[in-house]
Length: 226
Length: 226
DNA sequence: ATGCCGGATATTGCATCCAATATCCAGATA
DNA sequence: TATCTGGATATTGGATGCAATATCCGGCAT
Image (cartoon, rainbow over all chains, first blue to last red; front, top):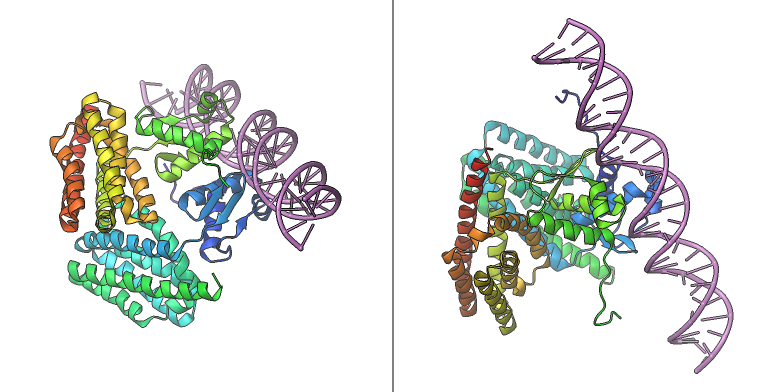
């Protein structure tokens, strides 16, 4: 029986993968950058084996591109692919939201409300790194009541990629007034049990994020002369 | 420049992962079965390292469940989860089919037709292992024209799981007359450019497969006393 | 100058070995 | 009998070292 304070022990590859994931999402490891196993091994003060496993793991997640005998590089998506990622999010998130709304209890609303405040708090505090995290958690909280393990697992995978690009342009993304309003309205519609209204708004919300983000990335890449 | 006959060199972990994937899909490695690294290493005549990497890879794909210091077991999904897998397929496949139909050229129709014949051929030949493969390939061929790399990648991942359960009950699944007719009709609708009709039929087709398969798995598990 | 060759260097791939952890089982204890 | 304990065994985790492969770079021919 697992004690109440049992700490689930993580293996080295797990811990290293988590850390590298954050470093990629935060942009510390830039698009296209080559990843040297030996270097990371020294940074984490371990041998190359656990680093290798962590990298292979991230490669399976699609964050790292792997080439035999040449090692890994941080993945870079085309604008097309980034668009597709958002389209996949729409398909899955709207489905989850539809299923969640009829099941939501007060506890769910409270949890969403809490995250919403956090997010609104980070607007003022200008806490850039926190907002991205809160935004993702808020979206997932909206779907918690759907009770769909597999869908959420796949959504986590997909969101990993979209979040990465959102975070890069975070200072702009979080300013968007309509998006802020969407977030609150989504919760209101859910509270009213308005499945159709919620589905429509969520689709529009993600669609708008997609359009605005793609524009910014396109501009940035043009400036970088690509 | 890569020669026309260049064989892309695979690493040991890749080759082993492919082989193990087939062994799991074919049912040779059964649900819940523990996987011993040393044993596999001997079978493939390599050390445990490449086997380890292959298993971690399959674990990232969701075919193998990994527990620290205890190794891997072949994953077993609940009926709920299997249902979800089919629901995800519906979301993504219908979206892909909608996008593909307007783009399909004669070459696409020919490719689908070829796979359809293969599949129909395997009905008579009673080639069980071939049918599962052809069925999957046929579905993917229907969406080839959609030109959506990410979506197809995710679909491959999801289908991996549904195909596994379809294959277990293959001898029954491939007999189903309505499904056979669906396959041909899908192609006809696509040829007519009937996006709505195609989308509706595809959804029904997958939905029916889901229902029938879930019944069979439920019955089988009841018999196994679970 | 440009392109090609070959050796030096950097890096990854994998086998082997030892340490850490889990599992099994016989004997002790209540 | 049921449960606990500790040590023997099985199994995984990770460090090290060597082989295989890729990359870099200077000299040579054109």
